[in-house]
Image (cartoon, rainbow, N blue to C red; front, side, top):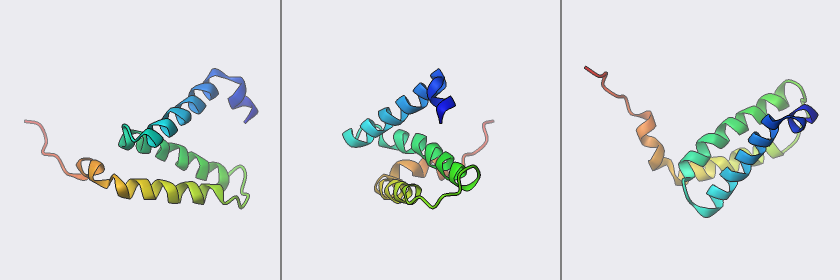
Length: 88
């Protein structure tokens, strides 16, 4: 975490988390925010599984909240799961 905070890359990541949180609270561009936050949640799980296998409840709580929001906005994600015909 020290390395992430010492580089500009860390500032970009933390800033993007804050922007996504504001988008969720405001109810604007919610599918975009959920898509970006899915990557963060995956990263949290990978960190908890490999470098720090502690039994923290936060990843589970965040995942439950993400699933709740995903179910509310699932209609916006249907287009991602539909097959497309190849371009001629």
